[in-house]
Length: 150
Image (cartoon, rainbow, N blue to C red; front, side):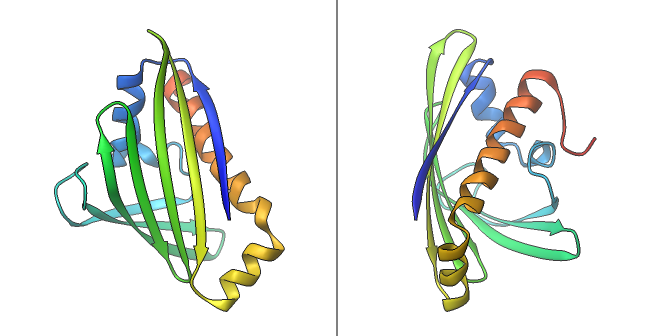
């Protein structure tokens, strides 16, 4: 399954790109993120791997984030791997004006187990809704300082 989400952000492209790469700030726009751990590679470089831990109610989930491509202030691609799912996320940033950035996120989900394949078939919109939530929470945090932790 593949889909695209776009959000217009009232901040310069450099601010958006730095915020996206800052794991310390991610808890403010990734609801449920409880911790992260550097696994390997150089921070914000191709090949770096981070373990992200989430809690959703009583359910805990971990995933491995890998940067697969980066072009400063323009593009960053990630792979996210969790139990039964491989997510390829390609993020593109475009200057609209000095204080406005368009973030386009192209997401592809590839289930690696039968259970995840079934979940993708039964709830395809849930994945896009979650991505939209993260992007709009990012927008609220970077523009107005509104955190999902409040």
